[in-house]
Image 1: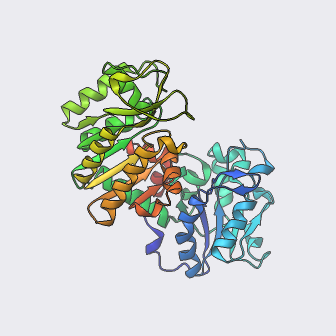
Image 2: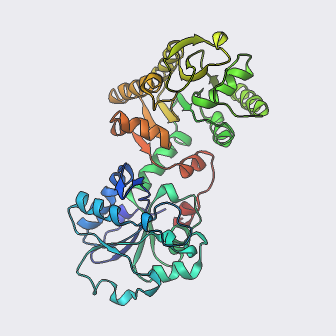
Image 3: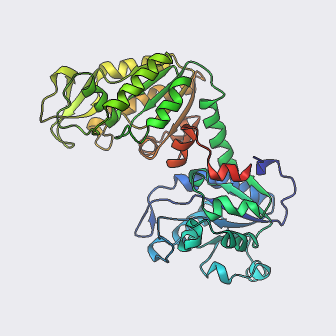
Amino acid sequence: MRSIINEKNLNNKKILLRLDLNVPLEKDKITDTTRIDKILPTLNFLIKKKAKIIILSHVGRPKGKIVEELSLKPICEELQNKLKKKVKLISENIKKIKSKNFFSDYNEDIFILENIRFYSEEEQNDNKFAQMISNLGDIYINDAFSCSHRAHASIYKIPKFLPSFSGLQLDLEVNALNRITSEITRPITCIIGGSKISTKINVIKNLIPKFDNFIIVGGMANNFIEYFGNSVGKSIKEKNCDKIIEEITFLSKKEKCKLIYPEDVIVSKDVNGPPKKKELSEILSDEMILDIGPKTIDKITKIIDNSKTILWNGPAGYFENPNFAYGSIQIAKKIIENNKANKIFSVAGGGDTVSLLNNLNAVNEFNFVSTAGGAFLEYLEGKNLPGINALN
C-alpha cells in the first residue's frame, strides 16, 4: 500500500479522492462533522501540492436512485467553510461528463461529485462504471477506511485503472489498528461493549489470543452476568448465547487472557428512572442494568493503569442519560489521564463510543479515534478489506 504522502509530483494532477462524508443530516443540517474534520489534512495536503481534486463520496442508502434529501450539497458547503476555498458540487449525471471538458468548464480546483450511491452501478461494483469515472482523473486516492470493507466500484474497481494511493487518514487508521493487533506493546487490554455478542464474537475470538485482558461491558455483559448465575431482570440481552459464552470462556482460559465482566451494577426500572447501585445478587425482576457499579469501575481503572495498550469499543452503559454515563466517563477519564502521561497507546472506535467522546470533547485526547463502524470491526476480526486489497 503506497501512501500519497510519499508522492512528490502532484502539481496540476487530477486526483480522484474517495472520502467517507456519510455524516448525519437533519433537514439539510449536519449534526456531527467528525468525519469531515478527519479528512481535512488530506485535502489541505493536496491543496498545498497544487493538485486538482475531484471528491467521490456518498450519504445514506439511496439504493441507486436520486434522493434529494441525500444530496451532498450541505457537505459541499461545510467543506467550503472549513477549507476557506470554493468547492463546486457537480450535480449533473456522471455518465454525461466528458473528462476533457471537466476542468476547462469551471474555473475551480476542488469539485465534489453528487452522491455516488445515486448510481446502482456503485454498489454493483460495475467495471464499466469504475472505468468511466477513472477517466476523469490521473491518480486515485482512498481516504475512506470506513467504506473499505465494501467491494463497491469507487472503492474496489477504480484502482484497477489508475495509479492508486492511500490517504493520510486511511494511513493513520491502519497504523493505529496494526499497533493493537500485530505491533503490540503489552500488557494490552480490550474494553468491549454493545448490545449483541453475536455481532462481535469473531472480533473477540481473533483478539483474545493477542490480548492480556478482555473487559465485557454494556448490554452484552448482561448475558455473562446471567450465564454465571445471576438474574438480570428486564435488562437488554441476546437470546441463545450460552454456547458463545462457553466458547469465549474456554478460549480466554486457554490463551491466558483474563475475562472480566461487571461485579456490581447501576439499575433502574426504566431508562429515565433514578439510578440505584446493586450487587449482582440483588437485581429484581422489574429492574434493568444501565451502567457498571463503583467496584467494577475501580477494577477497570486499575487494569487500565497496568496496561500499555488499550482498545475501547462500546460504552459501559446507557450513556445517553447522564444518570447512567458515569462508568463510561470514568473509563474515558482514566485512559485520557494515562495518555497525557504517555503511559498508554489508546484506540477507540464504534459509533456510540465516538458519540460519547464527542459529548466529552475528548476525541483528540486519545491516540486514535476511529469513525469507521463495519470496517473497524472487520479489520479487528482479521478479515482482508477489499478497499485495502485494491491498493495493494
